[in-house]
Image (cartoon, helix red, strand yellow):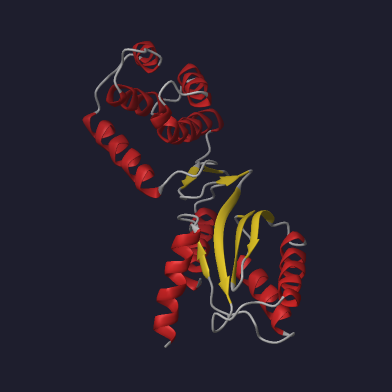
Length: 246
């Protein structure tokens, strides 16, 4: 938890120091590995510095005969220039990809194109924030997992307290709750929050309020923007955590 808050704090400080007043987030849930693959390919093509014809790349993008590799290259090339027609072409493709496997790739390309175009038009530096869980309306999306101290089951009353206190703390601080799922001995939250918000303090306040009724929530919790854990992954996480406690 502290690690992510340190990262967010350093990112906020860096953006403030550089005078950046606009940042962009991929709204879709795109795996970090795929984002890294895209950026490595982008850097490779930029390093080659080969010229290309915009309209030819657009034609390739929408051609039913072009390969996945060719379309990946076209998306990256089109996203690298401050050109409205190139941006609109990526936007059109991304809204309904002819190849479903390029949905994520085109989403990254669209954000990249938007950044370059906005930078050119406004004359102001833009920044891209990479996150496996994306975001929405300049809010970051994070997944958090909370457990009972010794993995004992929550009582019905404790579940009611969890529901009441966490929703009160988060909603009153303009945190959007997308998923709030309470199980027998753990609960998870998928949330969106403003970039400049100290979510750690808010979540800690919710835990403290709940624990006034019996210390039934562990103070340490999982907090990540890499992926949403499935039920089976959560169970594996709890087993591993329990073995460490023992």
